[in-house]
Image (cartoon, one colour):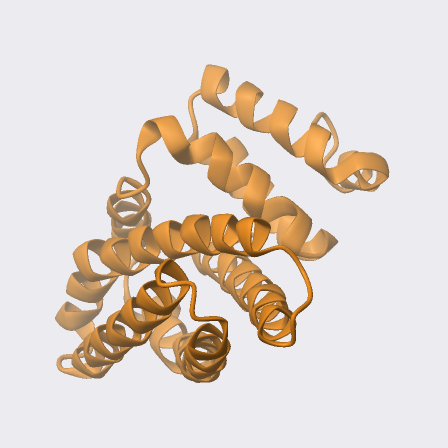
Length: 210
């Protein structure tokens, strides 16, 4: 049975995958290869999604966790501030067209983000799943999700799905199917169908009635 934190693990895997893609592209630019326009466009969107996710955690997940495990979330909030600093350096370097500094800043952000997400998955969200009552988990997830602007949600779906495997897709689609209004879910379904291509058939096999 799918649980709320399965959706978190899914988007964390998307963050890992795309950060690796961006880091590779940044290194290529520093070596005189690749398209700066494509790389920076992808980077800009990635930073937006990462920021919405972090602010959503701070508004929804961390307060719920504080009630059952005081002071645990504090360390992760500190991580967020460090990631803000690393993200800012990457954005400034790319905006200045300094490809060498962009590659260095990208590698630094990838390193710290990889550690942060691993800690959240292994520690913070394990405590969240074990100690926070399910109704409060759902409420916290709703608060977190609300930080994604409604007019950008389908863009996030289109970015997310190609970056994760079938299990992660299945988990988050099942969650969306449960919590989203039917008209909204139908739009999500169309996007997922479009961006998953031939793998859509396997997803419908895993989720009957999709």
